[in-house]
Image 1 (cartoon, rainbow, N blue to C red):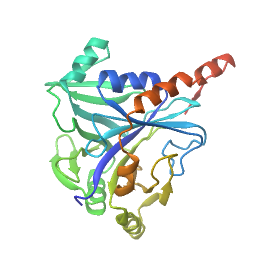
Image 2: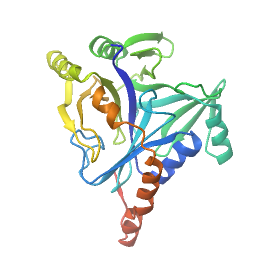
Image 3: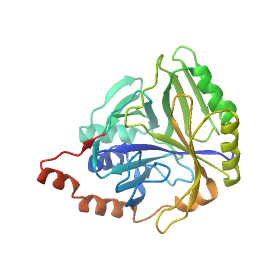
Length: 298
């Protein structure tokens, strides 16, 4: 499964400006591309919402060889309820730690050279206080599961991930498609997984020809398919094909055809400018205030 690679994690954001500050100024990530959509995504990339939304890809480098964040902003939704499903992203950057301290962004020391902080909305990020590596600083994504053995079987046997480490004391399993990629860590939380309304989605690419094979395998194994193979259009960019799955705890998983995705995900030098323009033109907060209303709390 070396041809499969970890791409990004999808976060729903209620405050786009504060979120941009966190990723750009605290973590030190770059805006890789920004896209605006007039209606909801066919594969519910923006969640179960039909209205206008935007997608901003942020990371330490190009999507070809970095694990990045996809920030989805629904114009009418101001906040989302957190669950216990997403347990954090770990990245190595002493510069991010320094940035957080300089900006007064809350940091909690939770281990030797390890700090916990939160993105707006309450999403946890663990910052390793060591020099940022030349390759991707993002080390792993941690998700909560209710049955570690069952989840390990799903991700390794059905999806082809390699088990790289097990920690019985912490009840975790670390796995990935390749040593050089961002890893997935599963942690047994000792109970049911609650996804709240802030639930995200983890994305991987594979050769396009594998998409129907993945879908057929999930049907054969009676596993959940949220969105069968479908084409997704982005105005002025490449059309990609995806299959959306759910693991035994309901974590959403997107597999996208690699060939078209590499075209779609090309770095847009105007990404930063497009995001800033969209935020400047976003008058939704003023509209709600003028009409004595509040944005929806999902």
